[in-house]
Image (cartoon, rainbow, N blue to C red; front, side, top):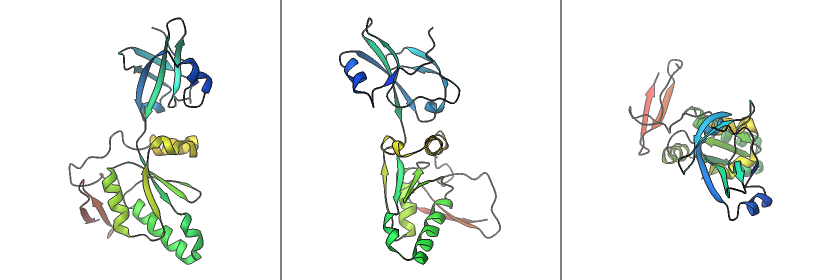
Length: 215
């Protein structure tokens, strides 16, 4: 079995490759965002064929990468990566506010995000938060805090990835749980560490209903 150790090109940023593949049979390999972080994996195409991929250490595939192309066989194999949505919080309106208001609002936002143990990436006046629970729960958390001066919406992972550095991409798409957290115990997530006495948490179930507990 052949091992694929080289990326030949990418259909998302090359007109030349798009022209080459115009009338070519394409087998797609669909990977989730965690599998795509690996430099070595045994991938399976949508036609049932297996493709051992072994890139250089520290490398990883990206959406649209071509790992196989044969004009003689009239065939190509292309990677498709399915990224989770990202909550994008726009803070650009804060620049017109007083320093005191900016501090207050950003602390309120940090409390809302940190209280749920959500990781975040800050780029300029934009905060990116990965999907670790359902979209409904995340929006409920932000809505409940009534934070003034911010705008927020979910965007597809592929729409924001071009704005990010590799380490930020890993934080948003490779650092969360392999599953969107479930709700076995009525929480949006579980704990694996302790808090000081008197610390209160409010979490939300799959219907957006709050649940508060104190440590």
